[in-house]
Amino acid sequence: GSLEDPKGIALRICGLDGAWDLPFVYNQVIFEADVRDEEAHRHEAAFALVDRHDAINAFADRGAGEAGRPSFHAQLADPFAEPNEEFVIPVDVCLRHVTAALLNDTADPSSGSIAAEDLAGEAGDGTLREYWSEYTDNDGQIYWWNEITGEAQYTAPTKQLDTCLAYLRDRVGVPRDLSPGAAAQFRAHL
Image (cartoon, rainbow, N blue to C red; front, side):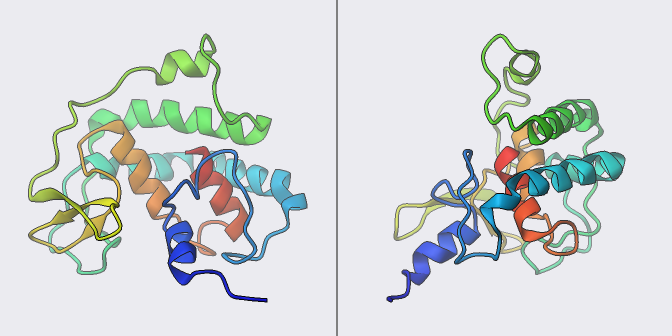
Protein backbone atom coordinates (compact mmCIF):
# COMPACT_ATOMS: atom_id res chain seq x y z
CA GLY A 1 0.00 0.00 0.00
CA SER A 2 0.95 3.60 -0.26
CA LEU A 3 1.62 5.92 2.62
CA GLU A 4 -0.78 8.71 3.42
CA ASP A 5 0.26 12.30 2.75
CA PRO A 6 2.44 13.41 5.71
CA LYS A 7 0.87 16.87 5.66
CA GLY A 8 -2.59 15.35 6.16
CA ILE A 9 -1.30 13.31 9.09
CA ALA A 10 0.30 16.41 10.64
CA LEU A 11 -2.94 18.40 10.29
CA ARG A 12 -4.89 15.69 12.11
CA ILE A 13 -2.31 15.40 14.88
CA CYS A 14 -2.68 19.16 15.47
CA GLY A 15 -6.47 18.91 15.44
CA LEU A 16 -6.89 20.86 12.21
CA ASP A 17 -9.34 20.14 9.39
CA GLY A 18 -11.91 18.80 11.85
CA ALA A 19 -9.71 16.04 13.26
CA TRP A 20 -10.86 16.71 16.83
CA ASP A 21 -14.50 17.40 15.98
CA LEU A 22 -17.48 15.25 16.83
CA PRO A 23 -18.40 12.71 15.77
CA PHE A 24 -14.85 11.60 16.41
CA VAL A 25 -13.35 9.22 13.84
CA TYR A 26 -10.59 6.94 15.05
CA ASN A 27 -7.53 6.93 12.80
CA GLN A 28 -5.00 4.14 13.16
CA VAL A 29 -2.29 6.23 11.47
CA ILE A 30 -2.20 8.72 14.34
CA PHE A 31 -2.48 6.41 17.34
CA GLU A 32 -3.19 2.80 18.13
CA ALA A 33 -6.77 2.64 19.29
CA ASP A 34 -9.61 0.30 18.66
CA VAL A 35 -12.98 1.83 17.89
CA ARG A 36 -14.49 -0.90 20.09
CA ASP A 37 -12.86 0.90 23.03
CA GLU A 38 -14.71 4.17 22.37
CA GLU A 39 -16.88 3.93 25.48
CA ALA A 40 -13.89 3.04 27.68
CA HIS A 41 -11.96 6.02 26.26
CA ARG A 42 -14.84 8.40 26.91
CA HIS A 43 -15.22 7.08 30.46
CA GLU A 44 -11.47 7.35 31.14
CA ALA A 45 -11.58 11.01 30.10
CA ALA A 46 -14.68 11.65 32.23
CA PHE A 47 -13.04 9.97 35.25
CA ALA A 48 -9.95 12.16 34.87
CA LEU A 49 -12.14 15.29 34.73
CA VAL A 50 -13.96 14.29 37.91
CA ASP A 51 -10.87 13.02 39.73
CA ARG A 52 -8.76 16.13 39.01
CA HIS A 53 -11.54 18.66 38.43
CA ASP A 54 -10.18 21.57 40.50
CA ALA A 55 -6.66 21.30 39.08
CA ILE A 56 -7.93 20.95 35.50
CA ASN A 57 -10.26 23.93 35.94
CA ALA A 58 -7.46 26.11 37.35
CA PHE A 59 -5.15 25.00 34.54
CA ALA A 60 -7.74 25.86 31.86
CA ASP A 61 -8.30 29.31 33.42
CA ARG A 62 -4.70 30.12 32.48
CA GLY A 63 -5.89 30.34 28.86
CA ALA A 64 -7.48 33.72 29.58
CA GLY A 65 -4.87 34.73 32.15
CA GLU A 66 -1.50 36.37 31.92
CA ALA A 67 1.56 34.74 30.42
CA GLY A 68 4.14 33.66 32.95
CA ARG A 69 7.49 35.30 33.58
CA PRO A 70 10.06 34.20 32.69
CA SER A 71 8.65 33.00 29.39
CA PHE A 72 9.56 29.65 27.90
CA HIS A 73 10.44 29.06 24.27
CA ALA A 74 8.64 25.71 24.10
CA GLN A 75 5.42 26.60 22.31
CA LEU A 76 2.92 25.04 24.72
CA ALA A 77 4.95 25.31 27.94
CA ASP A 78 4.06 28.13 30.30
CA PRO A 79 4.49 26.81 33.87
CA PHE A 80 4.28 30.30 35.39
CA ALA A 81 1.08 31.42 33.62
CA GLU A 82 -1.46 33.07 35.90
CA PRO A 83 -5.09 31.89 35.75
CA ASN A 84 -7.87 34.40 35.15
CA GLU A 85 -10.12 34.00 38.20
CA GLU A 86 -13.10 35.46 36.29
CA PHE A 87 -13.32 32.20 34.34
CA VAL A 88 -13.41 29.72 37.25
CA ILE A 89 -17.20 29.36 37.21
CA PRO A 90 -17.73 29.46 33.41
CA VAL A 91 -14.97 26.88 32.84
CA ASP A 92 -16.40 24.76 35.67
CA VAL A 93 -19.83 24.76 33.98
CA CYS A 94 -18.30 23.80 30.63
CA LEU A 95 -16.21 20.99 32.10
CA ARG A 96 -19.27 19.57 33.89
CA HIS A 97 -21.15 19.46 30.59
CA VAL A 98 -18.15 17.90 28.84
CA THR A 99 -18.06 15.23 31.56
CA ALA A 100 -21.77 14.52 31.11
CA ALA A 101 -21.36 14.32 27.33
CA LEU A 102 -18.46 11.89 27.72
CA LEU A 103 -20.45 9.67 30.06
CA ASN A 104 -23.71 9.81 28.11
CA ASP A 105 -22.23 9.70 24.60
CA THR A 106 -23.91 12.96 23.66
CA ALA A 107 -21.98 15.05 21.20
CA ASP A 108 -24.14 18.06 20.52
CA PRO A 109 -26.47 19.58 23.09
CA SER A 110 -29.81 20.15 21.44
CA SER A 111 -31.40 23.56 21.65
CA GLY A 112 -33.60 23.71 24.70
CA SER A 113 -31.35 21.42 26.75
CA ILE A 114 -29.78 22.57 29.99
CA ALA A 115 -26.35 22.39 28.34
CA ALA A 116 -27.50 24.57 25.44
CA GLU A 117 -28.81 27.19 27.90
CA ASP A 118 -25.67 27.09 30.07
CA LEU A 119 -23.29 27.28 27.11
CA ALA A 120 -25.16 29.88 25.03
CA GLY A 121 -23.64 33.26 24.34
CA GLU A 122 -20.07 34.47 24.52
CA ALA A 123 -17.73 35.49 27.29
CA GLY A 124 -15.36 38.30 26.47
CA ASP A 125 -15.31 40.64 23.50
CA GLY A 126 -12.97 38.71 21.21
CA THR A 127 -10.07 41.13 21.61
CA LEU A 128 -6.72 39.50 20.95
CA ARG A 129 -4.27 39.30 23.82
CA GLU A 130 -1.34 41.70 23.73
CA TYR A 131 1.45 41.05 21.17
CA TRP A 132 -0.61 38.59 19.07
CA SER A 133 -1.37 39.05 15.36
CA GLU A 134 -3.36 37.01 12.84
CA TYR A 135 -1.67 35.51 9.78
CA THR A 136 -2.51 33.02 7.03
CA ASP A 137 -0.04 30.33 6.01
CA ASN A 138 0.67 29.17 2.45
CA ASP A 139 -2.15 26.61 2.63
CA GLY A 140 -4.77 29.12 3.73
CA GLN A 141 -4.80 28.09 7.41
CA ILE A 142 -5.29 31.05 9.75
CA TYR A 143 -2.93 31.14 12.70
CA TRP A 144 -1.84 33.65 15.35
CA TRP A 145 1.75 34.58 16.16
CA ASN A 146 3.16 36.27 19.26
CA GLU A 147 5.78 38.84 18.33
CA ILE A 148 7.48 38.64 21.75
CA THR A 149 7.68 34.89 22.38
CA GLY A 150 7.54 33.63 18.79
CA GLU A 151 4.73 31.24 19.75
CA ALA A 152 2.26 30.30 17.02
CA GLN A 153 -1.15 28.73 17.49
CA TYR A 154 -4.25 27.92 15.48
CA THR A 155 -6.75 29.16 18.09
CA ALA A 156 -7.27 32.90 18.49
CA PRO A 157 -5.54 34.00 21.71
CA THR A 158 -8.35 36.04 23.24
CA LYS A 159 -9.32 36.51 26.85
CA GLN A 160 -12.49 34.47 26.40
CA LEU A 161 -13.97 31.20 27.57
CA ASP A 162 -13.16 29.43 24.30
CA THR A 163 -9.51 30.34 24.78
CA CYS A 164 -9.54 28.61 28.18
CA LEU A 165 -10.96 25.44 26.65
CA ALA A 166 -8.55 25.57 23.69
CA TYR A 167 -5.65 26.11 26.13
CA LEU A 168 -6.65 22.93 27.95
CA ARG A 169 -7.36 20.96 24.76
CA ASP A 170 -3.99 21.80 23.23
CA ARG A 171 -2.04 20.81 26.34
CA VAL A 172 -3.52 17.41 27.18
CA GLY A 173 -0.50 15.17 27.57
CA VAL A 174 -0.40 11.63 26.20
CA PRO A 175 0.32 9.38 28.05
CA ARG A 176 0.97 11.70 31.04
CA ASP A 177 -2.67 12.78 31.41
CA LEU A 178 -4.71 10.33 29.34
CA SER A 179 -4.30 7.39 27.01
CA PRO A 180 -4.29 8.32 23.30
CA GLY A 181 -7.91 7.24 22.78
CA ALA A 182 -9.18 9.02 25.91
CA ALA A 183 -7.27 12.19 25.00
CA ALA A 184 -8.78 12.13 21.51
CA GLN A 185 -12.30 11.76 22.92
CA PHE A 186 -11.67 14.52 25.47
CA ARG A 187 -10.37 16.92 22.82
CA ALA A 188 -13.29 16.16 20.52
CA HIS A 189 -15.84 16.69 23.30
CA LEU A 190 -14.27 19.99 24.34
